[in-house]
Image (cartoon, helix red, strand yellow):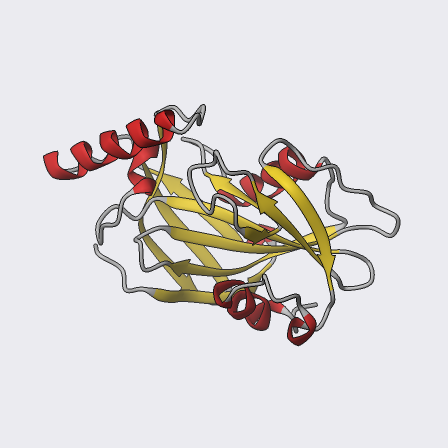
Length: 218
């Protein structure tokens, strides 16, 4: 099932209100899609990225009813997230991060990364591993990228980007006094003001749209 671009479902949902079912069979891309993914991987290696292919999650379908979100996933090549396609629907998580004062954690992504290289991004994000609970992946990515655990968090939305990538968007709040430590995927970071309108100029339009959607969340 090909999904439309945009917000597919809107929460917030507490972690226990999100469920997932995994199909055993992996998704088989077309020959053109496989070749395009191979070319993207080659380009990454040529610019010094340690990226390697493997298996990750693809969104087959979802249901948002009665205050719950259910996801149906299946294994698919990780590298398919590097190409545009209506049917690829690779699933990633994005965990936006707020501190006790309501400020937003933003990091500039290193130049060698596969996506958003050299650009500023909110919080933490990445692929969902085969068999993994995507909600757990939100916390895992936060720990891996920033060495912190949230005081509380929720799932805010499911959305599909124009490039075909599907994002499970979460929002996490850190306890007072929490200190973040960026990993090698970030070469700079900053805490942006609670008010999205006061963000710096290098906060691009997609980030501002995301922040505007989430800033009233509590």
